[in-house]
Image (cartoon, rainbow, N blue to C red; front, side, top):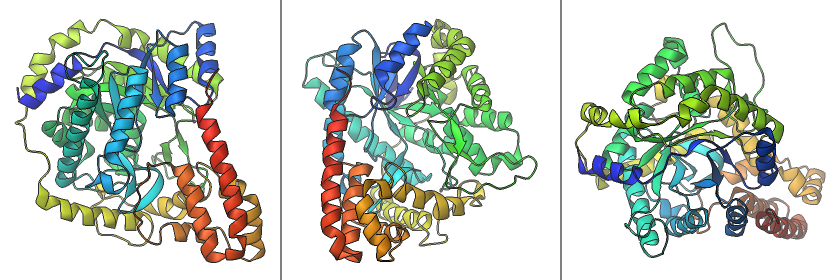
Length: 488
């Protein structure tokens, strides 16, 4: 057993079994209404995973749910990037995460293996890591740095984690593919390299894994069950601490088209959408695998979903998986030694400096490709870039103009001025990605959209800038108030 493997086992042994739970947002839908609906239905949830929110909102949540296990889904810690501090305040973000982990008394911090900022450009939704060895080095080094900072933060405070010098465990989540991915490694190979280099845990997202099957062209080569079986054999299952399952859906901005026989739908990750049966079947296959020896929790991701739908889906999950997830895990623990012996790998040094400059160039090319400013220049996962135009031509413009706040609704008066001047909002998308920009603020797509739109108006229609500034101020004030108001 390597020192890295031993450290992971020391850390994961401190985490209690969480069972079957829900990954939620404190704002939408109303979390306390959801809890009430679950209680009225007699549905016991093992834990709630909470997405990053205002500390005051998390304090209200902790106070009103004193006996509930709460875990933490972080945001804005771009560990996949060569120098995350240049994209947003990485170290300050870790300190903020430590504060929120402490409020919730969470045993882990979960973060996507993806970023919403890269090469000086900002996006509204996740772009997965480049799946290369150099990228795995950098990701592992950044995670190690993050874990060390969390450990220091929790050593400095009294509480559950303070006595042994270990903070909550950093978990890296398998990311979704939104029509395409890049790199010369499979996702399983990439995660194996990362876990060889740092003692992090992993979140295996079932829906995200379906998108890998769909958008790497694997569906052309073998059935889903065969793909999943092969993936699980190559993936570091012994590091999986949590499993997620959420909905999938067609994106509203992508035009519908007839599908040839056998071609899967153009689904992407969609937490507000129903969970398709195919994902439940995949989860059943995963839970039966003997390599899954350190699993602590399974959560349905349900943020933005109507409460009645959440309750029904959770009831179905409890009926199908409740006993399996809540079972005594003694049998799995007894298998750990044999699994570790069969999967052990020598520890490697994380992050080779000569690769960093090259990786910076590759992420710049990545940003150019997905924004339509370059046609190629990176290896494509599975050799299948056939759906890339859907991202560039439909998904990305919708993300800037509609997702997380529709510009025409945020700035109604200013947009009327632009329309009268013959300036189409599509020009805002080109403005957004025209050049890379330095940033010293924590990532918040809504606030960033406000700032960028005011800059855009000042450039294209200075006469309307006063109106844009006034509308922007009202938006910021309303947003701040909404972030603070959770439960009484």
